[in-house]
Length: 278
Image (spheres, helix red, strand yellow):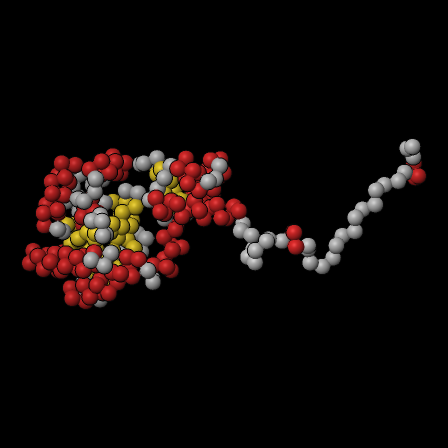
């Protein structure tokens, strides 16, 4: 029988329990449950780092995350500079801001830590600035330097980027790249002219690659900046892949033909010592 007006009855509300929740409401183990969105984002970023770049479908499949969710994660990472979409390859790659976040770890691990002592010795013996750089998405990125004490010297900051074709390290790395990748980079980046000495012909650049492979080192002969030269050599990992490069940089006045001969021997010897540890 239904009641109306003030006579209407209602179900009594259950009393709220005070104190700790029941065991069934807490995680079954002793650790806190992970934040799902953060966990998925970190898995996506980790996969990008391990795969050196991947398509949206690959990332979703390997992280076991729905494609739509994966796309939103990647766009969020992109907004923070942690991931980038490469028009060159049609793949997602780790973003440049990840370098800054991971820079603290570089101080105690990987290639920078492995190369640090050798690069310091190279700078001390030559009196010039020594650089370590890697290729990232068709650009050269400098990750470590030992500056010269000379008042006139080459100064390059961590994270600075430049074109591969006008850099000694860039040419040293390209000389050992797959030809298809070189063509992709040149098509996407072009061969802009920085000085009257910059190589702007693909044929001329390929001919220089041959010389680099034969002699084991490359030179930037005022191709990026007038008045500055550098001599560079690639670093190889245990699989024989050129994964980074080192260089000696300085003003042309201190890089005579005789000095270049001595510097090329010094930089190739240092590159060999570092590569043996990689």
